[in-house]
Image (cartoon, rainbow, N blue to C red; front, side):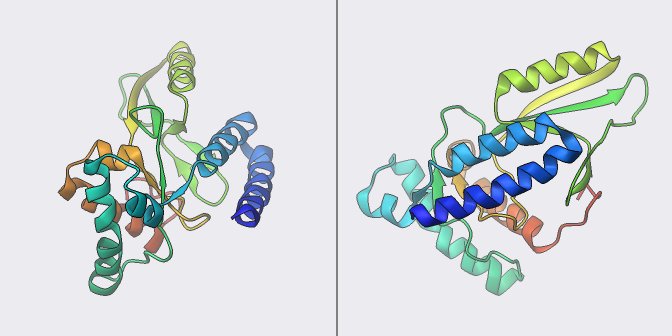
Length: 196
C-alpha cells in the first residue's frame, strides 16, 4: 500500500512539474489537492466488510462491481481496474467549476492544458479558490458561472475512485449513469472536444 502511494506521488509530481511549465500555480495546486484526496482512499471491499459507512452509501458501493462488469461486457466501456476505492469528502461536492464567456456573446473562454487540450472551465477543489477566480474573471469583463461537481474522470492517468459526492448527491439510477458516463471518458477521450 505504501509503495503504491509513493508511485502515485512520484507520477503526480512529474505530471505537476510538467503541467507547471504550461499553467503555473493552477496545475500545481490542483495536483497537490488530488494527491491529498488519494491519501484518503479506502478499499470498497473493506468498507463493505466492515460496514464502516452509512447504509445508503454501502448499498450503492455494493453495486459497483456489477455496474463495472455490465459496462465492460455489455456496453464495451473501458472500466479497467477503477472504482475499487472510496474517498469520503469533507464537503458536499468533489470540486467546483468556473466558466466565463465574453459579455453579450455566446463565446466561452477556454484554457489549454497538456494532454487534455482546451477546456471551457477551470476546476478547483477548494470552493473559495473557485469563487476568487470567478471574481477575477468578472473584473476582466467576463460573465461568469460557478457550480459544484460530484464526479470526474482522471482519463486513465490514475485509477478513478468513488467519491462520497457520487453516492450522496445521486439517486441509485443517477449513480449508475454517472459511473457509465465517467467510464465513457476513459474509453474515448477526444482532446479539445469538451462538449463530449
